[in-house]
Image (cartoon, rainbow, N blue to C red; front, side):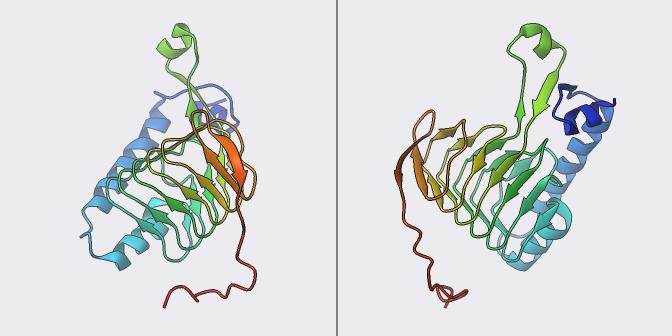
Length: 198
């Protein structure tokens, strides 16, 4: 298997592989181009995210400057995404987000992990697992989402939390490691699309 095939199969792979390096260089070039778009040119920012930076983006994607990613094309988001300043998404594996997701400043979403052994790290090995984030999720500033995590719908992850395990729907999760501290209401019954956007 090639290193890309190993990576995509969720197996250990060598992250210094030439083909993987080419993907990273393309992501770096795209991010540099994105960050040169004037800060108030929201239409061009949204177009660039949807057509050039991410694999898929719904309508209304807002990604503030200082954003970084490993690939970009492994990120798929729904409508009305907001990513605040300084977010990093290490999208070696797929990162999917639903509609109405808000990501606070300096959040890290990482699909990649490395061996605990020095031999594995010296061999530049990694293993990647996808991350899924549902609809109506708010991830507070400085939070960290680790590989393989699934976050349900209507979830709030508190600032600075480190999410190491799945978080179910309608939950408030806080702490290191993040734990569900209580259920939260879903008050969308009868809500009409666009009613809060006047």
